[in-house]
Length: 342
Picture (cartoon, rainbow, N blue to C red):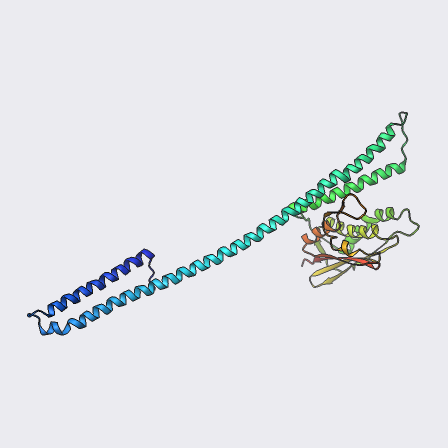
């Protein structure tokens, strides 16, 4: 059974041991003096020094034991201080990393707020100013009924739709950063989901290539029917496929071939949207998933590049990964993975 004493208790015990030692020395002195008296007995004289030596050794043993206990207590206290120091150091490092992450999040949100303000003050303002100019021109005409060209109405509607889609995407991206992507999962076949995405972008395909003598982009669904069902948010995942298909249509010459492929890889399904278009420059490819204001050469005002930022947020929320590979004048491949729910 080990004996533990507090610091004040140890001091008291040491003082007690010292007092015992002093008492033993006094006893020895008395014995020595007594031994010199004429009335001492032979028995007393014979045992005086052995008893004194025994008492001194006993006192010394007590003192040494107490010193050893003091050393053990100091070692234990030192270990506790070291443990506390390591614990505090670990907590400081953890807290520092948390603060750095929070600061990065604040900086990201601040940058996104700049983009939102720019979109409202520049893009939306430009659309409103253009519409007002057209309306003011029409008001200058005489008569109660003013004829309006259908082409003019179509252009105004197209411009408004473009800006509305851009603002909605910005707001969705901002909301995802603040609150995370909210998913409403359901079981669905990937082939069916891709077919829905292709139907969604058919109007875009027809509009982009309406003024060209070439055929529209060729959209091919090569996703096998036998793949396992996916437990995903079908609306958001359709948005991902539709965005990738729209990018391939808008940024390539008419008649580009765009294939959607998918294969199983362990507990994942790996999807690819592949085109044989002009490819993407390396400097653009590095930041294609970023949502930033970028200054382009020959352009006085910065441009908003949405890229595939929102798509990557959706894929990450599903537990997958997303990337892109492109070779100029060869084509582009957008890929992402989706976990198979078993």
